[in-house]
Image (tube, rainbow, N blue to C red; front, side, top):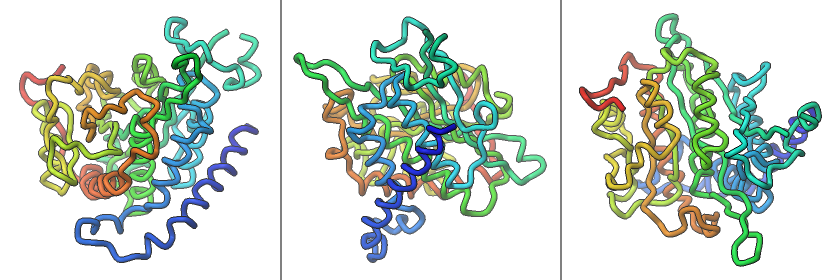
Length: 347
């Protein structure tokens, strides 16, 4: 597809620039608090954020050309990392019809292949990749790592079109999944299969994740755990520094197990917000999958505002957070541990 080839070149340019700009930083000695950073590509994370939350993508609005561009960029980055495609027709992209009641008024025909344009429908896109497990038994089990790629797009504010960049929500989560994909693909092959899924149109009502459940590349019964990454670009003052929280901590044995293996994870400090039910993980949890969201959203005032931009991202926190998860996630995909719901806690 011509658009896909173009985005490959664009992706290479963006990440290449990020690597050049960040080369000096990565060569510097790290402080003890930054010790984990050696396991990650900091310039890659910054390049992902710089592109996904840029003015160029105009907020990645659901079912717009800008969301499609974001999806294509993410697909090229998974391919670059050595991840296999697991979307439609041997590609990384999974096309998802958007119900009329959920369509944005700025849904753009340019976001659709020419053959589809003549037909009124609007689409969103999931990006799906796979890293096959090498163990003949455990390889049939799947760990699903996810984030949502869309945000609110361009909206009218006081008679002016304003971009809602969605840097924390959820370019930060996408950057985490892409970096985990790179790290897992570079290291020893996992025993379990890992599916990386970036969902479209989470904001209008979990459209991408709900479609994924009915069109999964693997049987849902094979998915033993889902970790969703949502808003990890800023620290939450309600918990200790250098820490993330997990929704539904008391619902499963997954959070404590990850923490025992080095994850800087604690329970959600905002139970009244009911975050367990407010992200893509909930659609999967309702189908029986142990599915929880990792976050550090501190109820900041930039949530769903134009000010959720790159200027407000704490890159040190973001990079350290991602780095702290690599070893625990690698343990999860190589161990015999199988996450389970705690008694009476399954939704």
